[in-house]
Image (cartoon, rainbow, N blue to C red; front, side):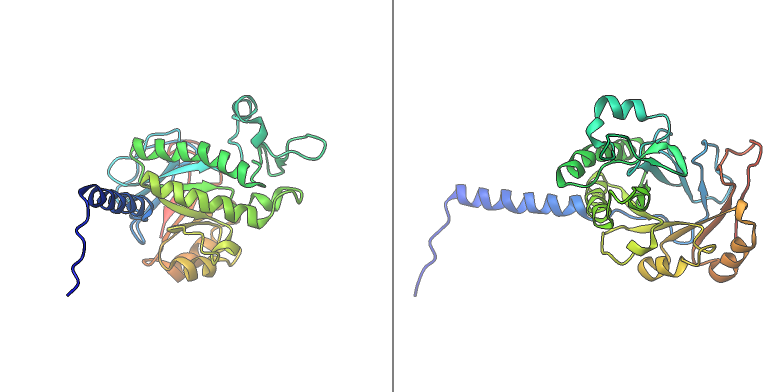
Length: 271
């Protein structure tokens, strides 16, 4: 009868270390819990304020502190510069600003204070992921539980310089880094990417009832969708959304500028 040779203690130690390293790596990329399904949500990007009674989910900019006692989502402008931050990017990461062949920065035509970020090459995506990943880490340290990286569709405003494949590749890095930071991560708009297997945990869909896009999100994410309709489209889309999905999805109505409660023009409703 053959006998197995006993493993040297050093071999055993290496095997255990390898197993633990693999386990830690796996735990680092497992998706953290997402927001409560169909929970009442508030969108506070124009300024933080105390959530109304019954609100379970609050989204705030990454520069704000998370709301206490609710599921807090950290908004991050990941594919474009945030208004007012051009000087920071120009000084620290000028190579990550998208430019034309003549060297001019490419601006979002709808938001001219926002400049598109250059995600065309693996090297640029990796460099940008370090910047955004640090924001994710800070969001988690501050107490946020999820993150919402915006402007996933920047390629559609890039004058042909960016492609959808670039967005998918960079989004995949963001999913990895958000999960490593302990954050669930949302797909923000861009329904055509819902079936790409990027790895998002839930969706934040603006005006999906207006543009008849809600089905693309529910097909991919089921009930894990936060739907935001805006008053400048009228209120019929919000009414239709409530009639179709009230009680099964998080649906809210907000003023376009998402101003704080008490400010002129403030509107907040849920189904």
